[in-house]
Image (cartoon, rainbow over all chains, first blue to last red; front, side, top):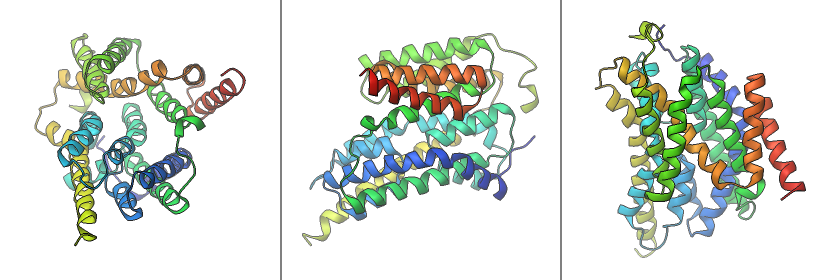
Length: 236
Length: 104
């Protein structure tokens, strides 16, 4: 079953991501407010949301804003925080390789944690319509822009997302995506390794490295486990 | 000049961030399109996919307050029983809100 992308799938992806997008608006608002407080202009704040579209790295970047922005440090920080995209994209490659190259690369330009998580679950389920990645990504991008705009326009508002439990909403969402896909218990070994490696990296390795370290550790343990023949043969 | 050059500087900074981020989004596909995908690579990728989320969520549970931990636990519990994300997430949010309201 080869993967494909069509308008109906994108619309359905938009709808499935709509509930979470409402919360992303509040995240965007928090970013917009924080960016203005750090000296960015409204235009710069909006431009960054539109072109970068990666919340954690944007929050880190505005801390470095000022008359002389340290470009190398900015790029290094952006890369470190967003390097998890490399692994996320790689994980979706077997699913997306059926698409024409242009669609494939365009699709991942709107890839972020939540639509990726839903896409990975769809892939696991054997779904061949990749609309959730694109439609979900568009929904998140629009919500992120609306939130940023609200933050820029209204200036003061929510500046501390944790106080309102927004961090918990994202955590619960990602956890439900993780648990929801059907798997057997042997996956708990790589996941345990990922958790331990991430915690170790948080304590002993440079900041922002824990997601990559955890993901790679989980992948390596998965590689060492005995394989299950016949399960994935069809996709070869 | 003194007005426009700081703006120019920050626009260059934003464009550089955008390029770096786009490279992280497309880079995984680029690399994988050059790697032959055998069963071993497939096992690695499949284990790595969930591990990304595990590595994102674990610090929330460890570094977060008890409200966050209970929320994740509630989500996990409902998810394992019902297998439906929306009730699971709703239960998690409600748990965190109630916990923070009554206990801490």
